[in-house]
Amino acid sequence: MIPAMKRSTTDVPVHAYGVRLLERKGQHALVADHFARPVALDSMALALWELCNGETTLGEMVQACVLLFDAPTATVHGDIAVTLEALTTGGALGWRSAQHQ
Amino acid sequence: MRTVLLRDDDRLLGTVTLARISAEHHLVHIRRGDPLSGHLAKAGPVVAVLADTETETTVRDCKAISAAGGHSLVVAGNADGARLLELLTAGATGYAVPALDETQLWAGLTTVLNGHIFVPPSMLGGLLHQQVQVERTPPPAPIADERFAHLSHREREVFDLLALGNDHHGIAQELVISPQTARTHIQNVLGKLDVRSRLEAVAMVINSRQLHVSSRGR
Image (cartoon, rainbow over all chains, first blue to last red; front, top):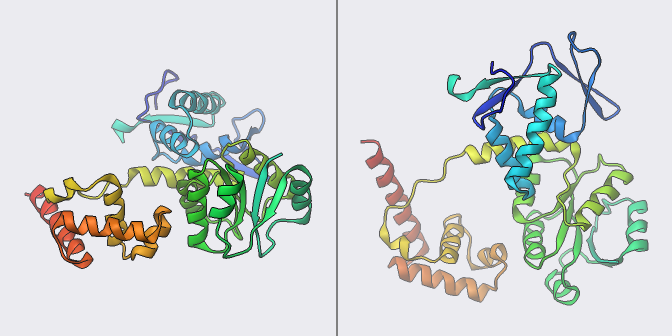
């Protein structure tokens, strides 16, 4: 796992052990024994969470969003990084380097 | 107030949404089979709401609307991730599915009216996953034959469509050009490749790609 720091585009976010996704009335949240409370996900955070399958790099996520939504790379990168870091800080995500896969 | 073209013969849109569109915009109904080109020429950049009941027609219309500076919201009968990606790639601005309630559908239409992409929240993850897979797919092997270097970008598009089995009508629809123009492009392509038929041109590409792959494998 990579310690919290500036991520490389080749780094791969992966679901932390024991975290589960719950859906209730169309709202989604992550739960785990080590969470103080459920972590609510909006639609974009949910989409990114689903991509954190241990195979998709940060760069691939950014590129997919840039192409689909025709948005500036820097903006997309910033938005995705903020969301993923929030999930990382909350204990929902870990990271590994693509080079060590 | 905007001009909203609506083609929904199967009534996929709810009455509440229809009433709201009528109240706030200039709503023009288009029947199935009625070409969009006349409406686009008259109304300028428009927003179109298209029921996705005729696969090829919807793709062609999304391309034409996008080329005319407009936006389109495609209303599908069911949620199909591959179709969503195909339509967005063709120039659609939004995609709606029956699972959306009237409020979500209106939010989607408003998003499209403002020129932003709208995707049902439940389909966003699948869409991104598919886009990642598409980006990972390696491009086809380059064609070794130098005759292809003489084709213009448009002629390459025409050739690729020919290779997929399209005739000049299909190519005209796909590229939103007249059949006569498509026929002219085809003749130019065959002339530059120095072949007599479409079949001969496609066979030339297959041979060329096989040569390229086998030479890389040595």
